[in-house]
Image (cartoon, helix red, strand yellow):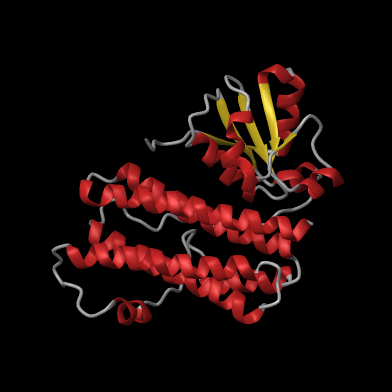
Length: 279
Protein backbone atom coordinates (compact mmCIF):
# COMPACT_ATOMS: atom_id res chain seq x y z
CA UNK A 1 0.00 0.00 0.00
CA UNK A 2 1.37 3.38 -0.93
CA UNK A 3 2.04 5.75 1.94
CA UNK A 4 3.91 9.00 2.50
CA UNK A 5 7.54 7.97 2.13
CA UNK A 6 10.03 9.50 4.55
CA UNK A 7 12.87 10.33 2.19
CA UNK A 8 15.35 12.86 3.50
CA UNK A 9 17.94 15.01 1.79
CA UNK A 10 21.55 15.06 2.89
CA UNK A 11 24.22 17.37 1.49
CA UNK A 12 27.81 16.45 0.71
CA UNK A 13 29.32 18.21 3.72
CA UNK A 14 26.67 16.66 5.98
CA UNK A 15 27.42 13.23 4.54
CA UNK A 16 31.12 13.63 5.29
CA UNK A 17 30.31 14.49 8.91
CA UNK A 18 27.81 11.63 9.10
CA UNK A 19 30.40 9.13 7.84
CA UNK A 20 32.96 10.37 10.39
CA UNK A 21 30.53 9.92 13.27
CA UNK A 22 28.96 6.58 12.28
CA UNK A 23 30.49 3.19 11.63
CA UNK A 24 29.64 1.30 8.44
CA UNK A 25 27.33 -1.01 10.41
CA UNK A 26 25.05 2.00 10.93
CA UNK A 27 24.42 2.76 7.27
CA UNK A 28 24.68 1.52 3.69
CA UNK A 29 25.90 3.87 0.96
CA UNK A 30 24.46 2.98 -2.46
CA UNK A 31 25.73 4.29 -5.80
CA UNK A 32 22.96 4.10 -8.43
CA UNK A 33 25.07 5.14 -11.42
CA UNK A 34 26.34 2.80 -14.12
CA UNK A 35 29.39 0.50 -13.69
CA UNK A 36 31.68 2.61 -15.88
CA UNK A 37 30.83 5.72 -13.84
CA UNK A 38 31.50 3.82 -10.61
CA UNK A 39 34.84 2.53 -11.90
CA UNK A 40 35.88 6.05 -12.86
CA UNK A 41 35.41 7.16 -9.24
CA UNK A 42 33.03 6.66 -6.33
CA UNK A 43 32.57 7.48 -2.67
CA UNK A 44 34.53 4.97 -0.58
CA UNK A 45 32.46 2.06 0.71
CA UNK A 46 29.57 2.54 -1.72
CA UNK A 47 27.71 -0.48 -3.09
CA UNK A 48 26.89 -0.25 -6.81
CA UNK A 49 23.25 -0.90 -7.81
CA UNK A 50 22.35 0.97 -11.04
CA UNK A 51 18.95 2.63 -10.88
CA UNK A 52 17.58 0.52 -13.74
CA UNK A 53 18.38 -2.65 -11.76
CA UNK A 54 17.16 -1.46 -8.36
CA UNK A 55 13.60 -2.90 -8.44
CA UNK A 56 15.02 -6.38 -9.05
CA UNK A 57 17.87 -5.95 -6.53
CA UNK A 58 16.13 -4.15 -3.67
CA UNK A 59 16.57 -7.30 -1.54
CA UNK A 60 20.34 -6.65 -1.62
CA UNK A 61 19.87 -3.53 0.47
CA UNK A 62 20.72 -3.79 4.15
CA UNK A 63 17.82 -3.72 6.61
CA UNK A 64 17.56 -1.84 9.88
CA UNK A 65 20.18 0.75 8.89
CA UNK A 66 20.22 4.15 7.20
CA UNK A 67 20.21 3.82 3.40
CA UNK A 68 22.01 6.63 1.60
CA UNK A 69 21.67 6.88 -2.19
CA UNK A 70 23.79 8.99 -4.51
CA UNK A 71 24.42 9.34 -8.24
CA UNK A 72 26.15 11.89 -10.45
CA UNK A 73 23.95 14.92 -9.77
CA UNK A 74 21.24 13.77 -7.35
CA UNK A 75 18.50 13.08 -9.89
CA UNK A 76 18.78 9.30 -10.19
CA UNK A 77 19.37 8.87 -6.46
CA UNK A 78 16.18 10.78 -5.61
CA UNK A 79 14.17 8.37 -7.70
CA UNK A 80 16.05 5.42 -6.20
CA UNK A 81 15.24 6.61 -2.68
CA UNK A 82 11.53 6.79 -3.41
CA UNK A 83 11.50 3.41 -5.15
CA UNK A 84 13.10 1.95 -2.03
CA UNK A 85 10.73 3.78 0.30
CA UNK A 86 7.78 2.32 -1.62
CA UNK A 87 9.18 -1.19 -1.27
CA UNK A 88 8.97 -3.51 1.73
CA UNK A 89 12.54 -2.85 2.80
CA UNK A 90 12.89 -1.94 6.49
CA UNK A 91 15.28 0.99 6.72
CA UNK A 92 15.93 3.27 9.65
CA UNK A 93 16.14 6.33 7.39
CA UNK A 94 16.40 6.79 3.63
CA UNK A 95 18.55 9.62 2.30
CA UNK A 96 19.33 11.03 -1.13
CA UNK A 97 22.55 12.99 -1.55
CA UNK A 98 21.66 16.38 -3.03
CA UNK A 99 23.96 17.22 -5.92
CA UNK A 100 25.40 13.70 -5.98
CA UNK A 101 29.08 13.01 -6.49
CA UNK A 102 29.44 16.33 -8.33
CA UNK A 103 28.65 18.10 -5.05
CA UNK A 104 30.89 15.63 -3.18
CA UNK A 105 33.71 16.74 -5.49
CA UNK A 106 32.81 20.41 -5.01
CA UNK A 107 31.32 21.00 -8.46
CA UNK A 108 28.17 23.15 -9.01
CA UNK A 109 24.90 21.42 -9.89
CA UNK A 110 21.77 22.93 -11.44
CA UNK A 111 18.32 21.98 -10.23
CA UNK A 112 14.69 22.42 -11.22
CA UNK A 113 12.48 25.06 -9.62
CA UNK A 114 10.34 23.47 -6.93
CA UNK A 115 6.78 24.69 -7.29
CA UNK A 116 3.55 23.19 -6.08
CA UNK A 117 1.09 23.36 -8.97
CA UNK A 118 -1.91 21.72 -7.38
CA UNK A 119 -4.02 23.55 -4.82
CA UNK A 120 -5.39 21.04 -2.30
CA UNK A 121 -8.68 22.96 -2.36
CA UNK A 122 -9.13 22.37 -6.08
CA UNK A 123 -11.82 19.87 -7.02
CA UNK A 124 -10.85 16.54 -8.66
CA UNK A 125 -11.97 17.68 -12.11
CA UNK A 126 -9.68 20.74 -12.03
CA UNK A 127 -6.80 18.60 -10.80
CA UNK A 128 -7.30 16.03 -13.56
CA UNK A 129 -7.52 18.73 -16.24
CA UNK A 130 -4.28 20.28 -14.99
CA UNK A 131 -2.72 16.80 -14.94
CA UNK A 132 -3.59 16.48 -18.62
CA UNK A 133 -1.85 19.80 -19.31
CA UNK A 134 1.26 18.47 -17.59
CA UNK A 135 1.15 15.23 -19.57
CA UNK A 136 0.87 17.29 -22.75
CA UNK A 137 3.86 19.34 -21.63
CA UNK A 138 5.95 16.19 -21.12
CA UNK A 139 4.76 14.85 -24.49
CA UNK A 140 5.89 18.09 -26.18
CA UNK A 141 9.25 17.91 -24.39
CA UNK A 142 10.01 14.39 -25.59
CA UNK A 143 8.63 15.08 -29.06
CA UNK A 144 10.99 18.03 -29.38
CA UNK A 145 13.97 15.91 -28.31
CA UNK A 146 13.13 13.47 -31.13
CA UNK A 147 12.79 16.29 -33.66
CA UNK A 148 15.99 18.05 -32.67
CA UNK A 149 18.23 15.09 -31.83
CA UNK A 150 16.99 11.99 -33.67
CA UNK A 151 20.49 10.46 -33.58
CA UNK A 152 21.02 10.95 -29.85
CA UNK A 153 21.55 7.85 -27.72
CA UNK A 154 18.59 9.05 -25.65
CA UNK A 155 16.25 9.19 -28.67
CA UNK A 156 14.85 5.65 -28.09
CA UNK A 157 13.95 6.59 -24.51
CA UNK A 158 12.35 9.84 -25.70
CA UNK A 159 10.33 7.88 -28.27
CA UNK A 160 9.02 5.48 -25.62
CA UNK A 161 8.21 8.27 -23.19
CA UNK A 162 6.47 10.36 -25.86
CA UNK A 163 4.06 7.46 -26.35
CA UNK A 164 3.64 6.83 -22.62
CA UNK A 165 2.84 10.47 -21.79
CA UNK A 166 0.09 10.51 -24.40
CA UNK A 167 -1.23 7.23 -23.03
CA UNK A 168 -1.42 8.83 -19.58
CA UNK A 169 -3.30 11.80 -20.96
CA UNK A 170 -5.79 9.44 -22.63
CA UNK A 171 -6.33 7.61 -19.33
CA UNK A 172 -7.13 10.88 -17.56
CA UNK A 173 -9.39 11.98 -20.43
CA UNK A 174 -11.44 8.79 -20.19
CA UNK A 175 -11.90 9.31 -16.45
CA UNK A 176 -13.05 12.89 -16.99
CA UNK A 177 -15.54 11.79 -19.65
CA UNK A 178 -17.19 9.46 -17.12
CA UNK A 179 -17.54 12.09 -14.39
CA UNK A 180 -20.40 14.53 -13.93
CA UNK A 181 -18.88 17.92 -14.77
CA UNK A 182 -20.29 21.44 -14.71
CA UNK A 183 -19.07 21.67 -18.31
CA UNK A 184 -19.09 18.09 -19.64
CA UNK A 185 -16.27 17.14 -21.98
CA UNK A 186 -17.48 16.50 -25.50
CA UNK A 187 -15.64 15.28 -28.56
CA UNK A 188 -12.81 12.82 -28.94
CA UNK A 189 -9.47 12.56 -27.17
CA UNK A 190 -7.28 13.70 -30.09
CA UNK A 191 -9.22 16.96 -30.46
CA UNK A 192 -9.13 17.65 -26.73
CA UNK A 193 -5.41 16.78 -26.49
CA UNK A 194 -4.48 18.97 -29.46
CA UNK A 195 -6.24 21.94 -27.82
CA UNK A 196 -4.21 21.67 -24.61
CA UNK A 197 -1.42 24.23 -24.21
CA UNK A 198 1.01 21.86 -22.53
CA UNK A 199 3.40 24.69 -21.69
CA UNK A 200 4.56 23.52 -18.24
CA UNK A 201 6.11 20.43 -16.68
CA UNK A 202 5.34 18.84 -13.32
CA UNK A 203 8.04 20.74 -11.45
CA UNK A 204 6.54 24.05 -12.53
CA UNK A 205 9.18 24.73 -15.20
CA UNK A 206 8.01 25.98 -18.60
CA UNK A 207 8.62 23.46 -21.36
CA UNK A 208 10.58 26.08 -23.26
CA UNK A 209 12.99 26.49 -20.35
CA UNK A 210 13.52 22.72 -20.13
CA UNK A 211 14.29 22.60 -23.85
CA UNK A 212 16.70 25.50 -23.40
CA UNK A 213 18.49 23.37 -20.82
CA UNK A 214 19.03 20.75 -23.51
CA UNK A 215 20.63 23.34 -25.77
CA UNK A 216 22.93 24.29 -22.91
CA UNK A 217 23.74 20.67 -22.06
CA UNK A 218 24.39 19.73 -25.68
CA UNK A 219 22.51 16.91 -27.38
CA UNK A 220 25.61 14.73 -27.42
CA UNK A 221 25.80 14.77 -23.60
CA UNK A 222 23.66 11.69 -23.28
CA UNK A 223 24.14 11.29 -19.53
CA UNK A 224 23.01 14.81 -18.63
CA UNK A 225 20.07 14.55 -21.01
CA UNK A 226 19.02 11.28 -19.38
CA UNK A 227 19.26 12.78 -15.91
CA UNK A 228 17.12 15.71 -17.02
CA UNK A 229 14.47 13.24 -18.22
CA UNK A 230 14.64 11.32 -14.93
CA UNK A 231 14.13 14.56 -13.02
CA UNK A 232 11.00 15.27 -15.06
CA UNK A 233 9.65 11.78 -14.38
CA UNK A 234 10.49 12.07 -10.69
CA UNK A 235 8.48 15.30 -10.48
CA UNK A 236 5.53 13.58 -12.15
CA UNK A 237 5.78 10.63 -9.77
CA UNK A 238 5.93 13.00 -6.78
CA UNK A 239 2.90 15.00 -7.99
CA UNK A 240 0.67 11.95 -8.44
CA UNK A 241 1.84 10.26 -5.27
CA UNK A 242 1.01 13.31 -3.16
CA UNK A 243 -2.35 13.64 -4.89
CA UNK A 244 -3.01 10.02 -3.93
CA UNK A 245 -2.08 10.70 -0.32
CA UNK A 246 -4.10 13.92 -0.08
CA UNK A 247 -7.18 12.83 -2.00
CA UNK A 248 -10.44 12.05 -0.19
CA UNK A 249 -12.24 11.12 -3.40
CA UNK A 250 -12.11 7.33 -3.62
CA UNK A 251 -13.17 7.46 -7.27
CA UNK A 252 -9.92 9.13 -8.32
CA UNK A 253 -7.58 8.13 -5.49
CA UNK A 254 -6.59 4.86 -7.12
CA UNK A 255 -6.12 6.64 -10.43
CA UNK A 256 -3.47 8.84 -8.83
CA UNK A 257 -1.82 5.75 -7.33
CA UNK A 258 -1.69 4.00 -10.70
CA UNK A 259 -0.36 7.09 -12.45
CA UNK A 260 2.38 7.57 -9.85
CA UNK A 261 3.48 3.96 -10.23
CA UNK A 262 3.58 4.36 -14.00
CA UNK A 263 5.68 7.53 -13.72
CA UNK A 264 8.12 5.55 -11.58
CA UNK A 265 8.26 3.07 -14.45
CA UNK A 266 8.97 5.91 -16.88
CA UNK A 267 12.03 6.90 -14.83
CA UNK A 268 13.27 3.33 -15.02
CA UNK A 269 12.85 3.38 -18.82
CA UNK A 270 15.27 6.33 -18.89
CA UNK A 271 17.62 4.67 -16.40
CA UNK A 272 17.96 1.60 -18.60
CA UNK A 273 18.82 3.78 -21.60
CA UNK A 274 21.43 5.68 -19.56
CA UNK A 275 23.47 2.48 -19.59
CA UNK A 276 23.98 3.10 -23.32
CA UNK A 277 25.44 6.52 -22.51
CA UNK A 278 28.16 5.06 -20.34
CA UNK A 279 28.94 1.85 -22.21
